[in-house]
Length: 232
Image 1 (tube, rainbow, N blue to C red):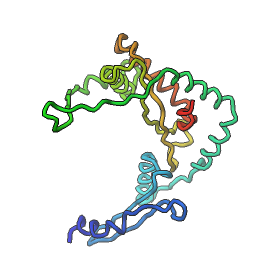
Image 2: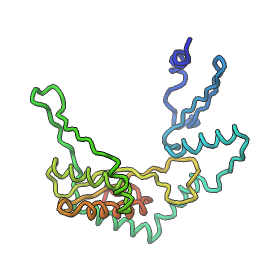
Image 3: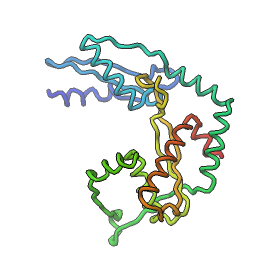
Image 4: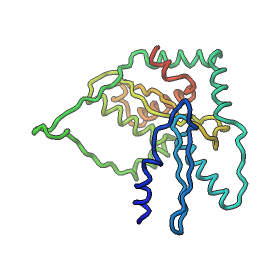
């Protein structure tokens, strides 16, 4: 029997929902099959993000190589308590006002569905862009590729939805504090991105820089909950 067949036969035992009230929210199992050893990991997303996966696997690799693994000096619990304290601070009130101003005139974009002429499949437009030109441009302008592509996406959304002020959401890893580099937890934040059709008349360099600056401002206030933003 192959490894894939072995794992398929065990799939119902390996993958099943967590009981959030009674389960430990992680499962680790080691399987030895023929001359190979496999580690099965299943961790609930509420306590584990993509960066956590990288840190965990790196620590396992270090342990196998006999290297020392540094314990956490700052934990997800510490982070949660720090965020709780922020709720009564001037910094929290300032962030609330920032998001209130940012979202004041925006409209949540609903991307329209379209059909091809024979009404069998969704209509599609395909365009290939040479990434070799984008990377050096971003470095030259002091941008991230994320800022660049978000600017292009918003430009397309304005054209398709015909809305003047658009709000979409994206995510941020939430690890702006250097103490969080290497710790386990779920820190990903949902943040808004706002665009005005008036920006479409600006030069690409200016529009992308504006988007980049907006993202930096928003990410610096990502401690303000998205659940509160929608109530503003």
